[in-house]
Length: 358
Image (cartoon, rainbow, N blue to C red; front, side):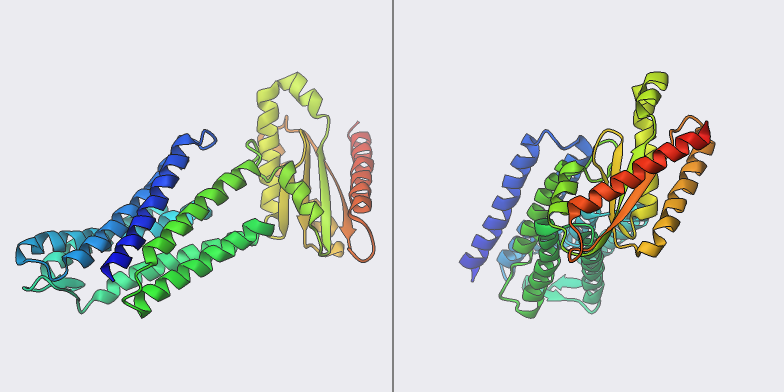
């Protein structure tokens, strides 16, 4: 069993070292993201090696008992952290200060257990045992796992194709690794599964970065075209165009133009995020692919216009946005016809709104 387990730990560490090398050579990622990615890899390496040392030292000569206890403290303290960090890389996690405080308190509790034995203890023969409050450790692990799986499944709703499959695989793989670890004590693969999860998160993050518009943080034209090409279900498609955007750049400068686009992108996202997906498909062009019923389309257009008016109260120089939409039914029309119809409505409304503002 030991030789097999050593191979598992070696493979785990090897995967994480390869990932660290990939992070080092990736010029697309900014420094804070690289730091979090490295943190994930290092936590997995430390936790995996700590668990392996704990197994190796179980029943070893009594002089190594203090080292055995220290190793278990490290393992139990860092193991739950990885789920929370991974969740933060996949999606938005609120109350990070509360989570950090929770994890620090948990680490202090594990440190205390090294002396009191209420979560785990190492007996006088240097043999590891669960303590009466071992459930505290399992509960902390479970909270992190549940948060991670919830974030992954929630974010998978906004992805398509291989990205969606990879995210769903993440949650399944995590559950399987945990089940194997605690249902069969001889099958210690939790950290190998975690290493694979972390590597997939890195690959997903890099992929999604390539599909995200850097200015507005909406999905970009590449992702939009892939989505349109694979669209099989009915959808209400919106097209947006910023009125006289060239004049905005010429009058107020490109810096203000960028601020305007970012503001428009945030406003669109706030309105359509829960019912669809938003894209920046050109310099001043945006789109949204939604599941909104046709009879509610105008209501959402009005929501966007009101939200933009609120933004314009803060910054009167913000440009206006024109909107058009059309309904796609794969059994009744083609995606090209729908795009042309939405585009035509948008330009018709643009002309009308310009005339009304004169």
